[in-house]
Structure formats: structure tokens, C-alpha cells
Length: 351
Ligand code: HEM
Ligand SMILES: *[C@@H]1O[C@H](CO)[C@@H](O)[C@H](O)[C@H]1NC(C)=O
Ligand SMILES: *[C@@H]1O[C@H](CO)[C@@H](O)[C@H](O)[C@H]1NC(C)=O
Ligand SMILES: *[C@@H]1O[C@H](CO)[C@@H](O)[C@H](O)[C@H]1NC(C)=O
Image (cartoon, rainbow, N blue to C red; front, side):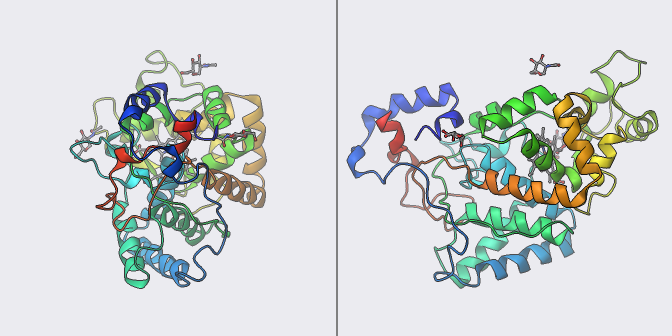
């Protein structure tokens, strides 16, 4: 029960409290509080082909657009950190709900929602109403890593989809590319993720791109004009500055490491060489002794990185809000009969 409290910014909390008197039915009729029991093979009887179908969808998406592997994998992070892995990040805004898609870390940045739509459509044909969007994200993220040359692993399933999404929650939780190691360590700690988890999960930036928008502050404003950036290799800086001039197009992208389509430990080699793109990446090498030791270890030990990454993804996949949910028919909207405000978390009522 206390498990979901850290997810709620106090403003959201008081907003929900205001709604309490409007509640019906009373707490006793609510589904039991707390987390679903996640386990491998959850759909073995109800949708035995689910994982095979999803791997095919991910594979075809990558043939169309190789970067979609990175974009899909990132969805797990942005989903799970905001009120648990509940597909909330997939909900479109409605006239009465500002969801997560327009949050600062997501707008003009989070992508490949159409791959999840395609996956959902394929599963609705095979076994209608069975596989949650939240589970699809976790399976597709695993497949994206595996099909990019990274590790493969078994995922725990059985999540439900949220009835609600909150831009405010996403804005207050998701870290900035300007973040320093200290604040990243603290943020991950809130989710019971260790320093090793933080560094390993940041290794997800072994695939994918970042926008100039995300590096412009670091390049042009973090340090006095004309002075070196202490933790950026000068030759790398010249390359990135050509791509990302101060007044340039913030939507231009660059690889987050030197091999943005291959899931490997190049990212850590780049950090050691001061060729990390984001401040939040390079700070893991330059900003803290403990994270630096892990970066150095992974730069030298790809197998060690892979196993720590899998452990981190599984732990991150375990995050749950404990709120009631459903299996959405369309990942972008709640099912017609479920009105979010009539279904507050039962754990809140007990609080
Ligand atoms: C440690 C804190 C993290 C920060 C501050 C951070 C920040 C960012 C930023 C700023 C971008 C580029 C966005 C853009 O410019 O449009 C990005 C991309 C990405 N992030 Fe993270 N991230 C973090 C952790 C993670 C984690 C834990 C994962 C997944 C496990 C992840 C997966 C990705 C991927 C795959 C991309 C590339 C996406 C694409 O090419 O579409 N990130 N991240
Ligand atoms: C973190 O772990 C503690 C102790 O096991 C537990 O009480 C708490 O609910 C966990 N928090 C999260 C966000 O999982
Ligand atoms: C790290 O970032 C936090 C939050 O922005 C800030 O308060 C703190 O002073 C920074 N720490 C260091 C060591 O720069
Ligand atoms: C990127 O493109 C979007 C949509 O085309 C636009 O609204 C936005 O202002 C651009 N962002 C930046 C940082 O240039």
C-alpha cells in the first residue's frame, strides 16, 4: 500500500482527496488494494501466441525504421516511473484529462506509439480483451533490446492498464537531460533502484537518438562562453556543435552513443572517453565516484552490463501503482464503460 505513495506528488494527492466525498461505491466494494501478482507465462492459457506475435510486430517495425527499437524500449521507462507500469503513457489527452504525452520529457520526443497500436491490434485479433497494453510495452521493450543484439530474458506479466494519466505527475518525476549524478541517484532510490541499476539502465542509451534540444543547454549555456566543457572531449564537442548550433533546429538528432542501432557497451566506452551526449549520461562518469566505478566496469565487461541491465529492467517492470485497472481494447483510451473518476485507488481510501 505504501508502495504507491511515493508516486503521488502532493498536489495530485490533495486533488484525489478532494474527490473522496464523491465516491461511490464505498471502499468495501473496491478491488483489493495492492499490486497484481506478476509472473512469467501469465498468458500461457489465455493467449499462448502473444509473445510470438509481439516479437514479429517488433521485428517488422525495426525493418521499417531501425530507430523504433530504441523508441519502444524507452516507453517502458516513461511508463513505469510514472505511477507504475500501467500503460498510462499511452493514453491520449481528452477534454477532461491532460495525459503524459505532452509532459516536458515526452513532447516532440517520445515516439513509436504506432508500434504499440499495431501490437495491440494484432493481439486483439488473436485473443480479444486479454493482453494489457502495459504488458505489451514490457514485452516489446524486451524484444527491442534482444533484436538489437542485446540480452534476451523472460518477462513477468499480468499488469493492468490504468484508467488515468497525469501530465503533472510525469513532469514532476521524469528526469531532465541536465540532471547530475546526485539527483539521478536520489530519483532511482525512490523506486528502490540502486546505483548499479541506475548505471545499467542508463545503458539503454546504447541505442537511439537525442535531440539538439536536449544538449543545447550543456553545449552553450552550462559553462562560461569560450571555456572548455570539463567533461566533454573537445573533438566530440566540435562535431556536436556543428550539428547543434545555439540558434539551430532543436529537433535535429544525434546518436546517444557511437553505435545507436546496436545494443552493446559502446555507450560506457563513450562515457569513459568523455563522448557522452547528454549531461545526464556523462555525469555518471564525471559526477560521482560510485557511478563512475560502475561505468568503468561496464565499459570493460559487456556481459556484466547485460546481466545488470536485465536485472534493472525486471525491477523497473515490477513497479506498480496498486490502483484499479482494466485491459484496454485500444491503448490510447480507456474502455467505454470505465470512467476514471469513479475508480479511485482503494489504497487511498484506507490512507
Ligand atoms: C537516467 C535518467 C535518464 C534520463 C535523464 C534520460 C533522458 C533522455 C533524453 C533527454 C533522451 C533524448 C530525448 C530527446 O532528445 O528527444 C533520451 C532518449 C532515450 N532514452 Fe533516456 N533517460 C534516462 C534513462 C533512461 C532509461 C532508464 C531508459 C530505458 C530503460 C531510457 C531509454 C531511452 C532510449 C532508448 C532513448 C532513445 C529514444 C529514441 O531514439 O527514440 N532512458 N533519454
Ligand atoms: C521499496 O522497498 C521498501 C522496502 O522493501 C518497500 O517498503 C517500498 O514499498 C518499496 N518502494 C517501491 C517504490 O517499490
Ligand atoms: C545536482 O542537481 C540538484 C538538482 O538540480 C542541485 O540541487 C544540486 O545542487 C546539484 N548537485 C551538484 C553536486 O551539482
Ligand atoms: C520540433 O518540432 C515540433 C513539431 O514539428 C515543433 O512544434 C517544435 O517546436 C520543434 N521543437 C524544437 C525544439 O525546435
